[in-house]
Image (cartoon, rainbow, N blue to C red; front, side, top):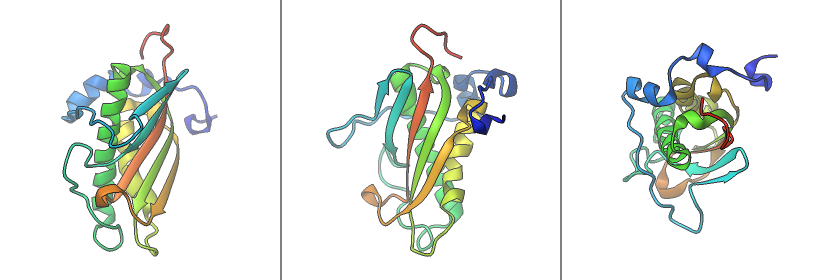
Length: 175
């Protein structure tokens, strides 16, 4: 059975070093968590699962990746926006858990892409988030995923990413 089919994955063997060390190697600084703009929280933990709200590429400020894919932005620009949204997502995960090394698995990723009716490259855009998560978390980031087109996203952003994360139980040592 492959990792994508639900097998248990030992990420240390395939991707040595801690997630925190990989962030440093990649030159990525995670942002401080921005308070939500409504009656919700950025993440909720239930048992060993962490449910993360949608994250935009501009969570820390002014939208940079505004517009629709297929009209205003290229697939490559959307990929970069999804990557930045994943950086913001990782910031929330770290703030929620104290360390990214508590993540045992990215279970599910949902990528929403503001796009024109005829744009069909949503999966290529959301690859930006999937690729970044794999760079940081290794095989623990192999996940189920949906990449869907949307008519509009908050503040005119082109992408929004949400995730379900499996977490080491409180009595378990972080990976």
